Image (tube, rainbow, N blue to C red; front, side, top):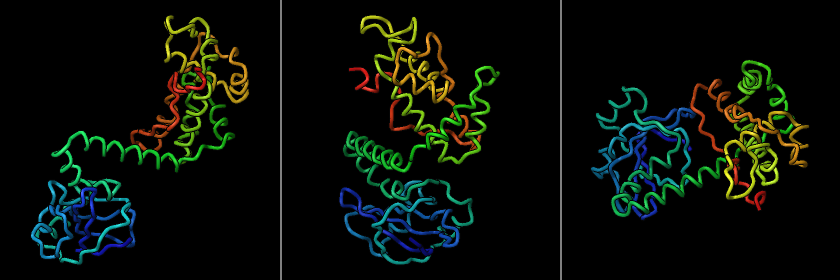
Length: 288
């Protein structure tokens, strides 16, 4: 979708009202920069006319916002209204005081604030459902790293080195961001598969006994990490033979491998959470 400076678009919200944006700048030759726009103060039950005074005023602090992803397909074109003096001045400032990825999340701001004023619990529920939907869609886009590539990285772990993860981390950091996420997804699946009562009963002195006896879920997770870190052959043997689980030993560091590689590569904070929960007791079938 392409925009022109001064374009005014309305977006219908869940309560039937409309929020309205006005385009300040859009470079058709550099779409990766997204669209620079003002989220106007208009919030009403009808599509505005171009001469509505509320289009002159920004909504709260959203006078200069950047949406890098145009994820709204049902924008309603209202018309084109040349920039006023204040809007033109905004272009002289640093691009976008409020930046973001999703145009949708900007456009629903007035609705969320309205909902929060009328029914705070519904506002929390609405945002929670949006986050779940976004996470589900994101997870669909993440395909697992091929098994061979995953185990090649694991094979670089050197338990005798001062930093056992160094070679594996460097290798993973040399890959794409998507592949690092794919690695984490596969790791989560491997750990989840070992999350069974039979495996928990085979980790030495800290083994699971019954619900009345102390058992450390964290230590069992770290023991599962060691089973993966020992490589493909060991892991596949342990899957079939729980009694072969490592005894009184663990390798918690494996849980940080993808995050450290990602941060080394991008200098950004790692925030990916795989859909497969590897925390102890997550595999309900394994604990029946």
